[in-house]
Structures are given as C-alpha cells and as structure tokens.
Image 1 (spheres, one colour):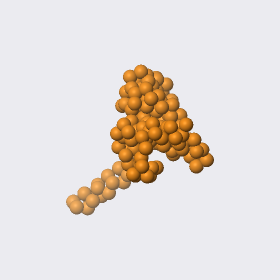
Image 2 (cartoon, one colour; image 1 turned 30 degrees about the vertical axis):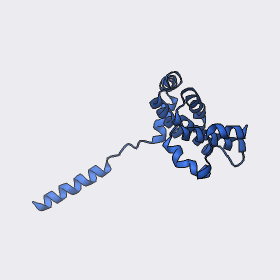
Image 3 (cartoon, one colour; image 1 turned 45 degrees about the horizontal axis):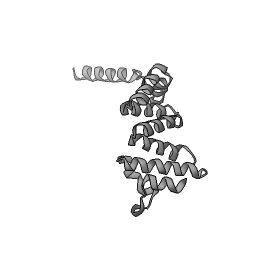
Image 4 (cartoon, helix red, strand yellow; image 1 turned 90 degrees about the vertical axis):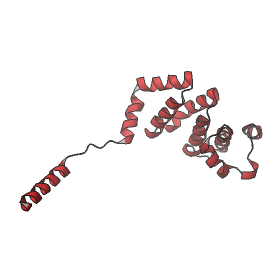
Length: 151
C-alpha cells in the first residue's frame, strides 16, 4: 500500500513539473499598453485636462517599462507646470538626471537640479531623499534662487 502511494506521488510530481507555465514578460505587457492607442489617449487626456495623478503614475510606468522613458518628459513637464505636481517635477528631474548624459550637458544638469528643487519645495519624499546628494545640506537654495543663478 505504501509503495502504491509513493508511486502515485512520484507520478503526480513529474506530471505537475511537465506543465508549462506561461511566463509573463513585464516589458511585453507594458509595450502592449504603450501600443494601445485608446488607453494611451485616455491616460493622456486625464493627465493634461484634469491633472489626474493616478493616470500620470500609470503612464509613467508604461513609458518607463516599455523603454520609452525619455519620451515621457513632455508629460512630466506639462503635469508639473500646469498642476504644480511634486511627483511630476521629480519625474522630470529623474529623467533628465538618469536618461541624459549630464556630464556632457551642463545645461541639462542645471535643469535637472531646478526640477529637483521644485519637487523638494512641494514636499516630494523622493526629492527629500535625493536633495543632499546634489546640494550642500546647509545651503539648499529655493528653486527661484537657483533659477536666477542659471539664467
């Protein structure tokens, strides 16, 4: 009897191991979303016309995880300037800081710093974590003060 149970368990084990598990590739899912013009238009309208932060975050994920992060900069800047959304200022900083070669482009680096300061002023937790790596802790300027120095 024990032998029969062991044989059945071994068979079940091997049968279950042979089942193919459909792998879900995250990039493919987000590429599919990126190519879904209806979904992207809906998110775009919510962002641009209503300042919808949830739509903004969803679209940011779609752009980033589908390999189109640089292209999202325009939405980040619109959301930041039109709705004073700290998360959008931080996203603009992050895109400029990580997706562009700031070592070669001093002006891009300055713009990234400005958006980080704006995000920090508006209370972004992400900006608070990163501000001290870009500015001396005791001398963090306001975004307006910094803007005057770069213009």
